[in-house]
Image 1 (spheres, rainbow, N blue to C red):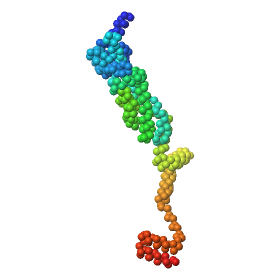
Image 2: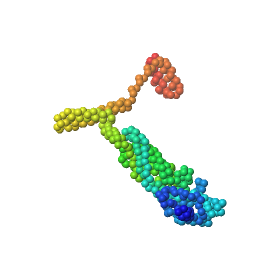
Image 3: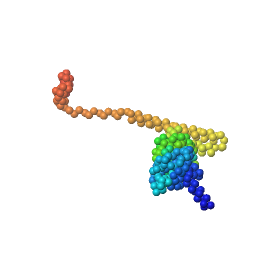
Image 4: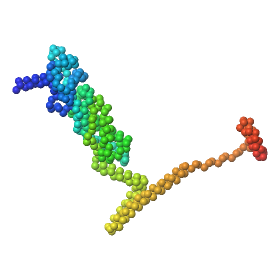
Length: 354
């Protein structure tokens, strides 16, 4: 058994390919570093093989079957180990899938998000899935070598955290800038806009690793049931207060409604109770409307008063003597401000006062 096992292992060393159990991996690292010359390398149609040494990509091979020989693959000469007489080279071989990987699930808490409509901070969750594709295998492999992440579990764990981080930031930003009610967001009304924002926001984070998020699917923002019930009630109160003309008016209307309900319960259980309740509702909103009209009239009066110009101040009494005024009149004439006729007319009036 040991003899045949040795033969099998030796045969494997003459043929390099992605292991069957690793077909679903984005990146598969061949376990051996010392590779014999003339070894057959098989690259599947949806992947690329990269040869890495000392953290640097020395070359790559596309889909097909390749015989590893320096005569037909020149970059291998940089990997040859001299002490082997040119029979072996040393490198890490990575198989990188270039197809789109779908159904990558993610999710987690976004944190407290302030609802623009009610002003409440509500704990929010997001979950869904996305698809990802390698666009630049060289960047991915060099990044992975530096991070030490070569398995799907290690790499996608980091990638999911990036998606959640960007999603958290973008949803909070959109709620503030666009003032979307949180109930509309959780209902899925803005799912497409959020997906587009998240994908655009992820681009600078994942470009460094030669990756791209192609699309998002089953994307959902959620809150707790009790928080949803609270938001619905407050949103209803806000809508009614706007209809009544303000919170005070709405509160007065609600008080009248409460009084009407008390009168209805004290009735004989016939249609009279319903009639009283209907009257109470009408009175409630009627009182609210009257209060609104009175406030509007007061505001109009205040506005009109503000628009009226202030009364002119009384001119101060002239305490100058006629002689002083005659002197000033002469100075004005000498300065050329008054003509001879104007000067003579004014002088005659002042002379009468002497």
